[in-house]
Image 1 (tube, helix red, strand yellow):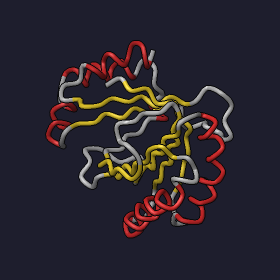
Image 2: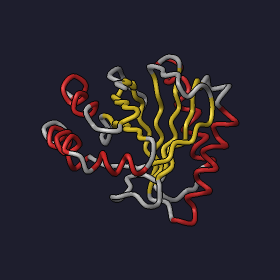
Image 3: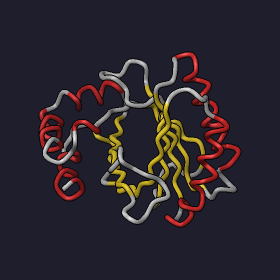
Length: 193
């Protein structure tokens, strides 16, 4: 339903520049994902375009359809600014690691973002990362943020992703502040726009 039906609702949202659905990888995972079965990314040219889209009847229709298949107890929103770190930002791959960092004290958020960016700079080439982005939560979001930032790593193959996971998890434990929460998801992204 999400891809075949709900995707059309998303594509109808005015001002939408890009739309990616990140589906949990169906094959066995080295991680337990009780909290994650997928997430969408909606990109807009600016905050005004996003605000207009969020006030549109098309988004209201998409929200209504979402209630037909999504568990509201497991739903969250993160309004972010995308910071490109490594690789060609136009290249999509079939395998993606998403590291969600949340619940940090305000004084630690910038340091955690810097640590995530440094981690990518130091490890990307050896870990076969094709593309990396840091999605940083904006301060003036229209609703509570589900994460402080999301580290997005794109891999050429699912096998490359799986091989890299233990190293990324260990490096994240060493580099990121010990406070707050972290969740990792292995996703198969599908670009609809």
